[in-house]
Length: 255
Image (cartoon, rainbow, N blue to C red; front, side, top):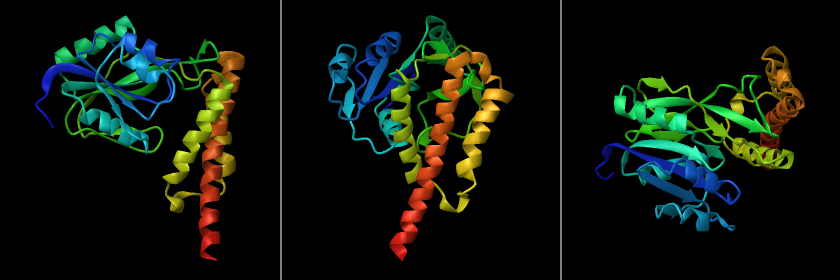
């Protein structure tokens, strides 16, 4: 990796047909030292919009979220990386907190909470707020892992920034169901069959809904909260069902 400018910041964004969201994202990170876009062959106006904000645009065919993000990290020349998605926004308050964290230089990685918007309503209950993710980290020895909700592999002390990233989540119910189908298929391609149980088909989605909607007060988010938690539970069910399908297919192929 080339020499890194230690107190500078790259925003790394992965995209795929994000013309509805990407402009708003890019505008809220215009203050960083370097914007890097990793695009998976978008067929809409995503690249046209990105070119108005940065020349650091790279095309990389999607194979997994970790690989896409790691590809972006490798393109950064800054000492710090802010990993952000097209449907996320950085407020002025969060910007100041990020700059303060970099200046103080007390931790190598930072968890930042998400504030999730769904059907025009902020999800404030059900364990969805705060929804913590590592999004700010030093550009050294960092690697992403996982299938869908990827994680940073980095053995170091982590801090927290309490000002949230604004996550616009899904455009509508159709969009969430579509993404759930895509993400659950990715999970079914990357799972340990020895840890799978048929009971998970029933109990994992039921427990998630009961835990989030009732025990963690998701019902306080009203009808939008009810729909959101049902759809998230459906996503979990899809993932388990596709794992079962993959195991059955492999068994049939051996017969």
